[in-house]
Image (cartoon, rainbow, N blue to C red; front, side, top):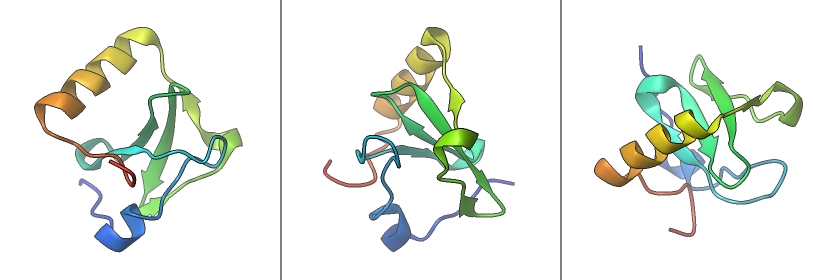
Length: 80
């Protein structure tokens, strides 16, 4: 089941490490920081915004996520 986060919440979410915007992939339950290649899980519609729980994203997955963001016009959580 895909996550559905409130638009107001999404507009406030930032990476806890670099404080920059994230990309939200609802059907993957994933918030992604393309600058640091780091993915944050969304569990039960709750973003897990802990640096220690983020997972690294390799170059192949980064390219896939970025291509998908471009194709689906996925906008950053803020500033975009």
